[in-house]
Image (tube, rainbow, N blue to C red; front, side, top):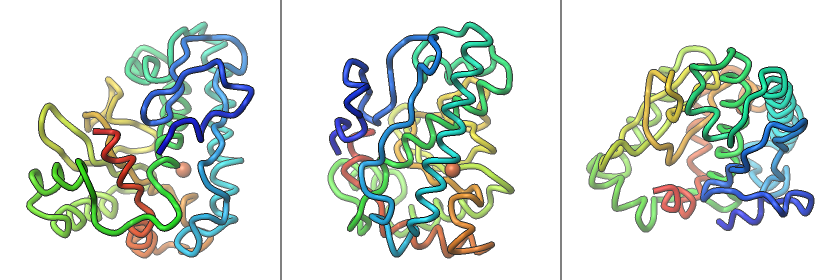
Length: 225
Ligand SMILES: [Fe+2]
């Protein structure tokens, strides 16, 4: 997917990496901004409902952006979002939580698309088959990581050196963080906070995770490799 879809006109002077993550070093007020979704709020129906998407984007993600801007200003932190989260251990918890929240959600939106899903394609398919045997084995292991993450957090597929690994992180931790219990370059990730699924799926995380496979943007996963 083109990252241009994530750039609003007012942000045109800024730059974004291949995952749509903002890369402009700055510490001015409101330095970080909420990216537009690359689809409409009802674009992921019936797997993720419109109200969940709207609240998730305009309330939860926006709160991470607002609170990250506050934290970088208060602590006079300079750097791109990626630089900041890679050094999260140097900063107060508000930077770790909200910087991770902004990065993780910006990444997450790009990993889904209307009429997505199916089996992996291209580079993603080759790498998954090489590391896990086949797609079904990979899916089983990834679902397991998503289900076993206690409380709020994320399950991830990451690249570590030349191999792929599956793991999970608590809260808004991210595998790029120096303080993360699971490290690597994120290729795919799923938000398993209840705010991502509770309105439609209530407490049934497994139903949400199973439905989410119908949305995967495999072109973006290949681009992340
Ligand atoms: Fe979320």
